[in-house]
Each structure stands twice: as structure tokens, then as C-alpha cells.
Amino acid sequence: MTSGWLQDLNRLVSDHGGVVRVTVIEADGSAPRDIGAFMNVTRSTFEGTVGGGALENEALAVSRQILGENDTDEWRRQVRDYPLGPDLAQCCGGYVRLLYETFHDPEIRALNVTVDDPSHAVAVRPVVSGAAVQIIADRKTLAADWPLALRRDVRDMMSGIQSCRAGLTADGWFIEPLGAELTPLYLYGAGHVGRAVVQVLKDLPFLIHWVDTRADRFPETIPEGVRQIIAETPATVPSEASAGAFHVVMTFSHIIDFDICRAVLARGNFAYLGLIGSKTKRARFAKRLREDGLDDAWIERLHSPIGVPGLEGKEPAIIAISLAADILVRLTDCARSIKGEFDVIEGGAK
Image (cartoon, rainbow, N blue to C red):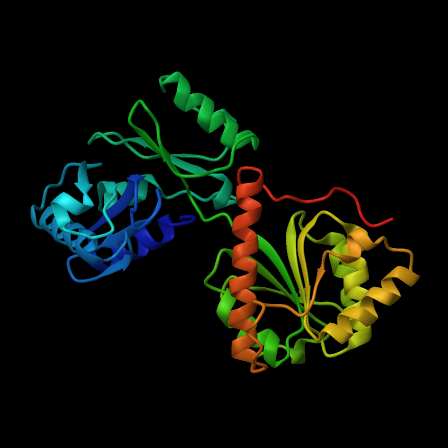
């Protein structure tokens, strides 16, 4: 069984016989996508994007030309450079380097691996044609003949010193995570707004843990990748939540909401705590939290109302979109603050 983006390759090769995977391996200036963005191209369809417009049109044409050559050599690759203004007349300008890789049954069979956490495993290969892709999930599998800088980067990724992120080394090796790194988000409440939030967030870079008190409060179908948690007392969930998580509270009960908020603040080590409701609701919660002995510095981390200021619609879809926009900005700020790691406070409220 394959893992991460290899699952998509496996499916497409099975359905179409051959796939060219196009990946952004360098980007400079006003490039439309970042390093690591990719698209999978078959003779009749494609998935993903490297930025749209003329660049994507060129990538599709090159990929289908490659597929039409019927070359059976394994691990075929080529690299093409695109100054977007001079070559493709894209007004955004910038520069992009694309890696074209061909996959058929032999390559997929060689990569038929499973790892426990795809976001903490990497695919490593030189950009030259003919060398196999290697999947690295721990420090024990580093190759002795790799360049020293490559060994150091992969070792640091496997040990957690460095984030698993896509990049091209000076020696011409490309490293990328096997799966997307998802931020844990705990959503408390499966009512109308909670369901709208899940529909908006399910395709964004969050691992959603959806919490409510009974199974019949959830919809019949839970979106793929969303983890359902049935907890008679939802306030017990924050004690076991992932470090650096986002928490969004919107249950059917103000009492349950308050208990969850107090538990998140007491646990600490979180990135965001949002509470649905009005400014009046937040003021009442803040008063009770102070009475319970929580410091104002911690209470300030309770965000309510949720969402983007000024977008005040009360329809579930509007709330969900507003919340998504707000927490995506906060997620970006967290990533920038300390090089991809959450800016969290150790320990809980005293």
C-alpha cells in the first residue's frame, strides 16, 4: 500500500498506464506557486496545479509530449526553466524551474511502501534521469553515498530539528515530504455551524478532530480525513489534544463551551482558541475565568467572536468562511514566527 501523494500516483497509473508528475523545484520573484507545488498529468486528464495560466498550459503540453514518446526507460526525468515574463508573457513575472518525472508500473511497484506518518517521511532523488526515488522515514535509511549536505538535511528532518519541506539542494537533489503536514484543529460541536465549518476546512491544511457528545449529533457521512470523537464530557478532550493545536468551540451548550475553554487554557500549549458567540458571551466567560483564578494574559488568548472582523453575517456558511480566513492568517503568522513551528506557550494557566 502506498502512502501520501504516492496514493494518487498509484491510482492514476492504474487507471491510465502512465503519469508525468510536474513539480516546482525552484521559484523566484512573483512565481504563481511555491516550491513543492505539483500536478499529475495523464494523456487525458490532470490533477493539481503548478500555477495556472501559460505556465500550466506549457507544463501540460510538455507532459503529454513526454507520454507520447512511449519511452520505457525507468525513472525518466527532465528539468525545464521558465522565466515567466520573457518566455511565457505572464505579467506576474518571476522565474520557475519545473521537474518532469515519468511514472509507470515499474516505478510504482518500487515505491509501494507504507509509512506511519507521511508528513514526516521524505522522497529523495537527484533531478538527473535514471536514479530511483528513495523514500526515507527514519535516520537509519540514509544512503552512504549521498552528498554530505543532503545527508545532513534529511537527518535533521527525520530527527525533527528541521521541518519536512520541499527543497532543491545545491548538489541537484530534490527533497519533498511524502504527505502534507497538517495542523491539528479540534472542533467542538456538530451542529449546523460546525458542519459548515468542516465543509470549508476539510480541504485546507488542518487535521480536524470533530468532537460532540453523541454519535447522532454528527451527519451520517463524515468527510474523509476528519476524525470523529464522541465524548460524553467534551471538556476532557483538550487534555489529550496535540501540542500547538487550534481549538474552535461551538457546542449546543454555553456550559459545555465554558468548560472546554477553561480546559484548553488550563492545558496550555495551544496555538489558537476561538469561541462562537457575541462580545457579551465572551465578557461573561472572561469574568467567570477570572473568578476561577485565570490570569488576564491567558484570558486574552480567548478569541470571540470568531472570524474576520467586519464580516458579521450569521449564516453558517458565512461564519465558516470568515473563521477559515481568520485561522489561515493566524496559521501563516505562526509558521513565520519561528520557522514553521507553532508559537506556543508551554504550560497552562495558573
